[in-house]
Image (cartoon, rainbow, N blue to C red; front, side):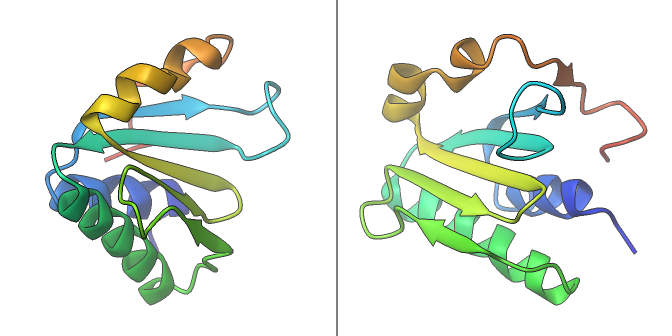
Length: 116
């Protein structure tokens, strides 16, 4: 069975999310073990990516704790417990810049064996 992080990353990638970044939040935040941050160029694509993440997690029997921001499609947060996915509209991603905000968190490279 794939890990929750693998399921989340693949779901975002399958829906053509752009610039997918994975932050290891262990020891940095109590919110989650990993953040998956990505963006799309339209509200509809942001919503489609977030929906795909939630659907694929459910299919693999992972609990979707909550989803916020679907109505506007500008920043959708998919809370999966150990993994939180932040799906941004391109403009909002640059404005909020979570990668800088959580600069203490090491990035996990996509090529690592932990995420494929």
